[in-house]
Image (cartoon, rainbow, N blue to C red; front, side, top):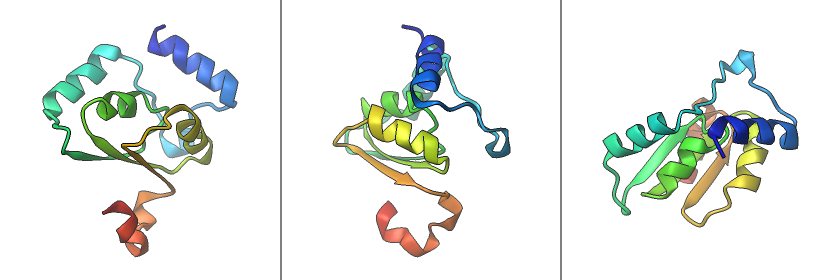
Length: 108
């Protein structure tokens, strides 16, 4: 299934749409995602901090190579990530990254 179709299915299943106030755009180009992961040259011992994980398409690709700390501000998308990306090497932080100065331990 293409990422476009997967995005449409997720939007219907979880009842969300891109939030303009948060400047949301969802990457649905599989070649672009593959290129990003390739250029990152990740190892299993690496930990990636992904701010604004959105629908989790890039997150899913990153998880194949490394551990990921995913930060998502949008509550609906955080729910999507919780339900769709339940993996042992994923730490999901729901909230605004800019407000995490007092919870630094969560990110380390």
